[in-house]
Length: 96
Image (cartoon, rainbow, N blue to C red; front, side, top):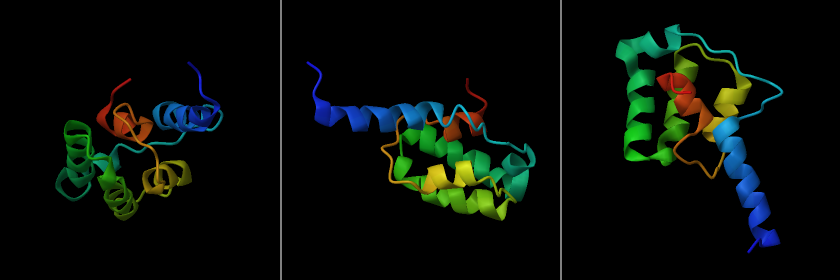
């Protein structure tokens, strides 16, 4: 049964998975290798452990690595909900 109260939550989950399709985020491979691959390791840990509470830490690491992409940073710092398939984590890990 479709409950109207669940619709906003479902919409947020879809945004977590697909991001903003009308404003694709720019991505720089150098972020992944910065500081001994810190960003890549954080993203992999978040994915493996389903530890989406670590996304703000990932945002800080991305900022330190030179990322100024508002869509990525804002998403990592948002309350979510975040799920496996999060577009930022998948982008950083090269998943489709």
